[in-house]
Picture 1 (cartoon, rainbow, N blue to C red):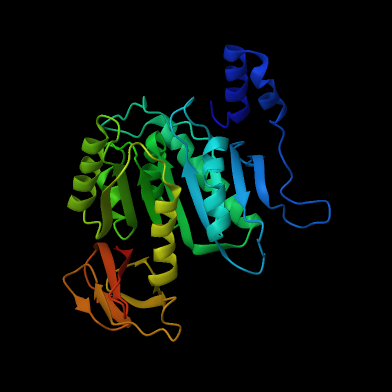
Picture 2 (cartoon, rainbow, N blue to C red):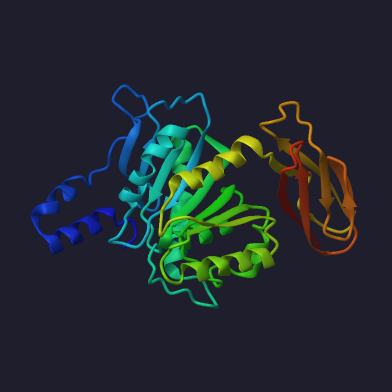
Length: 345
């Protein structure tokens, strides 16, 4: 049921009768721009991404100013009929307004606790959601002023399946992943995908009185992320039950956005024949240090060579695929990571 927000609404109406007829009438796409050309704020429902046809719902703060870059939250709903994309968006409205977040809630096919996770290949629902979500995010970025260093993907309950899968496949888009009392499976992604995402921030939390099995699933996530070298992984057991807790996720996200350095690697080239000379530069944007000062920079250049200079030129003499791993420590002691790959023929 790809992009099936309206389809789901009709299915409910058939089951429970005419009480929900109004839901069907609300399935028309809402204009994201007003007649005067200004961006619509508040709830913007039933957007349909142009290339994939995927339905998604937005919340744009009423104070939206196109001259300011906004953090973006992409959020996954829990298992239908206990949750759906529009309801998931609605859970974020107060938080989005309070903290100035743009909220995007795509209609995920894979957000179901009954999702089968094969051990040898991705579930087709996850693959579809991955493709559609990337397209949705690109469309949102084309319409609104989004801070590219402040995009989070999160999911409540079964919505954590697509949150982990899509986030891990696209560290170039998402800065962090947050699982909120979420489902997890060790076979969600392959190890090579995990390696390319281990610079990301990942936070999972669950309730002390959560549903049976959630404690075990989240501890499995703890083991999986830790053993694969995710240095900015956090797990917490919070008071309460199976809570969607948007405030907890938003505070974690905004702490990173407002106080951790955003780090990027600029490379003169990423592939070529040996001997290959590559110049690498650490580009750091630290909200707490406008003059750009940091405590330390450390490069692991992938061939047992290290450097502590912000810019380094290195010659790769042998063919191979080299994982360059950069560690930046800011003046407050926050460790931020970034990585790149150099292919030498």
